[in-house]
Length: 347
Image (cartoon, rainbow, N blue to C red):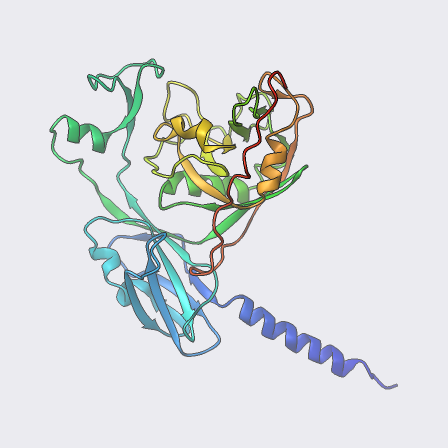
């Protein structure tokens, strides 16, 4: 018996192995947490020996540091000592370059530092109050400045390192892809991706939608409560973070209870316009941006509602993680489509 198909099968397997090698060309942390002033072991998967690792701040095309590397095991702390010596630790991205080309998703290097807590205060007196309608969240770092107190003590304990991922919402009306922004809200971003990875956002309705009405732009679409009532969550809460990411069309932000800035959990909302959501800046933690799916956002944001409740709620079928693109190849955030006035009295 002759096996005439064997060569083609062998060729296919060889091509698949080559593809798999290329597909996994990236920098991979050996573990999640690294204590301060210790080695940071990682593994370099690359196709050539012309390998370099560059550190970036989000949005800055110029690296803050760079070092030649080699395939196999590396100590990132030895290659890039500034990781432990920087005076003000901040989120950095470690991007692998192979032959001068960025390959694979970057690694997020998230410093573990003392949490900057916020309290609701009267902005005119800086006195703490419970009524958020008369107050705003003020972070400790800002409170100390306006009240002439010593600078907030910050302890740098180490680095949380993980491969950067985007989040995809698969909804009953289409898909949305989000880039997370740990540079603005590291704990919210990491908490969210852990919930996504664990399957939390499976078959959950969008329970709150505030669409355009009476000539006014849309506000938000909200999801993340398995009960669908708006009162459920993951069984724990995380703190408000001092994100400077403006609320705008396609921006992903943490929902919370009024009056308690640290009541964030699993509920999130997607902004439908800058005009309607700009007042949320500094009050809610914006931590992601849609980079695909503007049409889906618009479709979700224009369903029929009674009050703020969809008549036939759209469903978040699942959310899942995908590798982020290499730095230098990122897609720009989606933009709001041209505004169209909604007839008076509609909805």
